[in-house]
Length: 281
Length: 344
Image 1 (cartoon, rainbow over the protein chains, first blue to last red):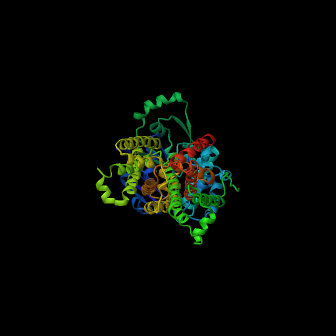
Image 2: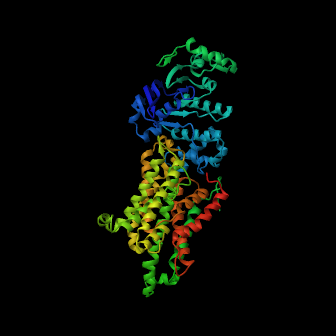
């Protein structure tokens, strides 16, 4: 097991944002973390990324407690993409991607940089200055930078991605998630991606984890997690779920007029409220 | 001139050009002044052919220490500016704007004015080092203060930082004004030197006193180049890329405080070098610190020595304070930059 999280709690200025969270992530797995705004998705990710102090519980990474890893060793095995990165200085796309590389001569990083810029469709932007790029282009540049960091690492690596496709058009969303899935399958990357797009998550994830009030509400395969009553309960979203013959669900939001009835009926109607993670099997 | 895809100059030729300019202003700096020396005379003195005691004295005891000090101070101010701008991710974070120079100069002025009364013990303790050490403490203390104030819940707020800088500048300015009010005529003369900046009194003693700190700051700066690059993507990314964020911040503040403190100790307040030079370097050569730091050092030294030459010749045989000269050149130049390009 590459990442083993047990009883995790993260506090922000005294307030518990994530509490008693446990899950596991294996090499080769793509786990998408879902949840409403403020559910604690980013906080969870920042806790795992070392930005927030872990208040309770234990995080084991590759058989060793996360806090015992040195910064440098961890950087070779774990790459993080924050929700927003603003570049206000005149750096070119190529320079930013190269920031992910360890100190090495340009001739050595050049093949990796070209490959990644090709994969993320930013080769044509390589000499452009980052402050002038669109939001989606910047996001692809950052993702290339994040991948560059662990591209030639031996052994399994962990990617922590916070809404890495939020600004992308549908084609690039598809491209990025296919790439992530390929990296998981072929190279054994363990990917933890926070996302909002339910259908994108359902299509590409091996497993979904739905956070609610800082706890895992349910986790499992897409068809087990994305059900009408779970979505109503957690998001207050009324949606129709179509089970596609390919084996994953399609979520279609209903017209708003229905929402109020669902919001009223849900607390009493279906209430599988369970403080610990309900493992759908 | 070669440019790459982003419209930047090629790094090698550009550095050679700055080196050429540095050499040119150095030649002008040693030859011009109240007692003009020709290049033939200088070569004669250097080789030992020319037996002219006055020329030898002017060259070795007046022009050379001034050239060395001017170059070092300019280099350190520019590099400190580049470091602070990288650290705060803001091209406006000049050592002057966030109050570092004012803090350093307040400490130095306090030593001048109160040296024989309240701070007598400090003078006895520190001896000839009293001034530079006080300026250094004042400089790094204010950077630290501004940084602490701007930091909330693990985030450094740039707007708070600049506002804190304005407040610190005002407080230090009030302190300086108060000390000026209580100073004697003689002390007032020295005070003017601090507030307007000057290389006019540069002697080998000053060089010996400040050079170790200035050089230390210049030599330590390149070690920050990679973490500072990471800082351009945001504070959190520094840790993700495997650098120690806190260590980097402390080192950057120490290096900038050390350098600016020592620079202010020997030359007083000289603004704009730390703002204009790194800005120009970034626009022409790119924002990566492995090029910004050395190029800023070279260009900053060159600019200050050049401004010093101008300060000496425009009102010959008197001299303008170099701080005034820099503000006269730098202010309009910076406004021009603002009009022509977007800063952020």
